[in-house]
Length: 238
Image (tube, rainbow, N blue to C red; front, side):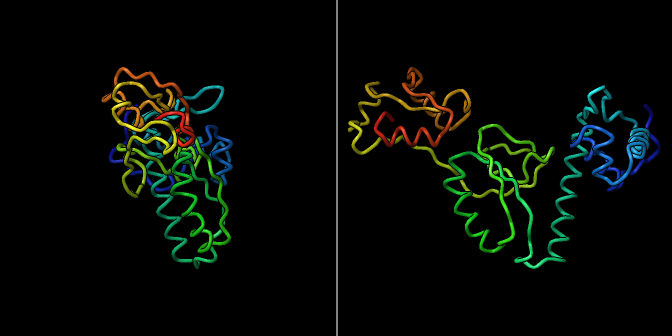
């Protein structure tokens, strides 16, 4: 496919690509854009001819986005978010903001950071509702599985609009009355360990343990850092 000379993508083009990435069919994308499926099809053909690239693989199940289509959708999301922010700032007072915000995070960040912040946010915007999803898997913001993701990472995706809220530090802990009195006992391998399982292979505590205690085989392996904290607090290990 040969590109048209100096084709310039418009905001409407990006909106069409984003709708197809999100919904996967012409009919559903058309419903989102308030046009019929044939209009979406013709628009997609025009965009692909202009760019000189096939953006979607057609199949019986729908339209599968190429890497370029995913990249364009990410830019479209940034534009969508900027427009929504501008509209909100221009038209609404803080007390008038309403709707449902979908937030994905981990259990520890929810309890330690997000939940306390929601109390203050709710006071500022009483008409807002919240859907909270906790898990270790990353929800897709491009498919709108969530509106906001709060995650601990050193390598956030470049296409997302984000804000660094602070560091998370890791240390070795034991319960006060858990029967572990000396760090030497830990070094000697005489105490049980509680650790994240394979659901969190890159967690800082896992990397630290493997670097400093490579021979340790944890007695308890769980898929939740909050559960790690609970078991350590009960004196089951470090």
